[in-house]
Length: 517
Image (cartoon, rainbow, N blue to C red):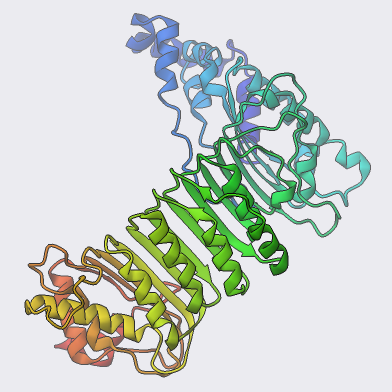
């Protein structure tokens, strides 16, 4: 709550006595026109004030190290109405449980009363659980003199003093700052939501480490970036949602093994440090991991990985409730084989599937189709590639297969199809084609992806993303006209590049001068 924009007004307002003319001037008028405080007791008014608080922020990725504004200015706004409202607001603890603190050494020196204001704010929260959002600017680094560093330590002491009441802790800081956080009070931590975004400080050799002491917290929601799994000293047994960026595959395995209540797991920038260590770890498992409540799993690998390692990792899992699956790899090919085995073993119904890869070859098509045949309930599909290799383009055969399926459906002739319809429930399709590199692409098949307008299982949304290149691609005139007709009947079509700046359909319209027709 205390940043350089808010601080002067906050300091002057909180310091202002009830007898100040700015309060007294409108008090009499406000009281005459305020049925709330005239007809209800202060306790009820305080409860009503509590409804002005914002909802808890949605769980997501760890926040970047930037200044963020506070959601909770309700107490100050309510207190600014009149003396009566101020007295009620100041004595309503739930209005003061959410605090945003910006720690900047330069600003702390310029505004020494910031610590006192934070203390006053927290003291008004009574004994209620606290939601703290803390940002330590990257400039507040240990390269400053020792005397300057003393100015932020009282803030750390204040934060730690309330550690037993942390319910939500959202912190963005240089990595060295995390080691100052500690439990200073007796009792088990009640931390339910932990969000850490740590940035490495090149001026200091310390690495991010979150360790509150012997009594480890067991949060339910965990979002971490910049702090390694081995330096994250928490218990995972209560975790229901995890979002971890920059983790090894071994770390992913340990989290899945230690978090039996997981419902949502997102692992990004996953590293494979030592394939032999992973193989040894997986082979030494005494029993498989069964997660009965895991509905969403996202695994994005940053580096290439041995096929055997992926086999062992997915072979250790059984996920009967899984409905959303996302995998990002350097390349697919045989890496899809263990995923197919996972789906079969788990007997799960996948409704949302995302497969992205940096490099792609035409020989992966059969593996991809085999996987898609295991997901007949699929409603959302994303298949994206950055650099396709070989001829034809890796996405060509998938586009043609989906289009062919729907063409046969329109003509009510499925004799040439497999006995099992191909993705009959698909509603949304994102096809990332990456760089075409001048190779032909089956644009003429794209309109056929939507089948018949009378088909209840018709595709409703299509996103075709592409990486900008010179010259830009465009589709044929007849294809562009058919796509425009689909838009007219309510189909959602997005053909912008990956930056969202150039629209391939609009480029085609301009190229064929269709806007003048």
